[in-house]
Image (cartoon, rainbow, N blue to C red):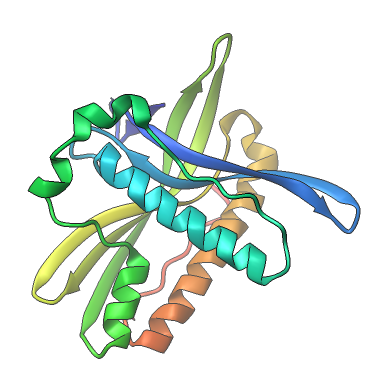
Length: 201
């Protein structure tokens, strides 16, 4: 996808999962962004993003199965790009997610998190049309174990062309996910000032 971050364009791979099924006899379909990766400093490296996306996907599938929802097995792969990333993990430390830091805090370590929120524009390219999207991104600045870790995560997205209909709903989705995360922070003792997306422009 082509992203536009603070007027700076860049390309990145986005790992999206589409969930479809039926609930109470009614069909449903929605997409969830699990990670974004690129080859420069504006987002995690693609090889890191694949692993992050799969961790979130496995967690979502586990939660669905625990709730009694049947979910097929499946993971993100980038087989055609693997050769370009060989040796990357040996050069860099493993990528931690925000949930890892919740566990670190739960083990008795001090963890503080600063959060900033941003609506990020992007364009998905298909064979015969483009699909403008807006991503609700959460930027994390984490201080723990004597180190600083900066990373980001998408909490919702919507069609830019249908912003009037979708922005409010997806903002509520993102804020609901933030609220769940803040509750995890409270239980583990993570220090963080709560922030939420604003529904109206």
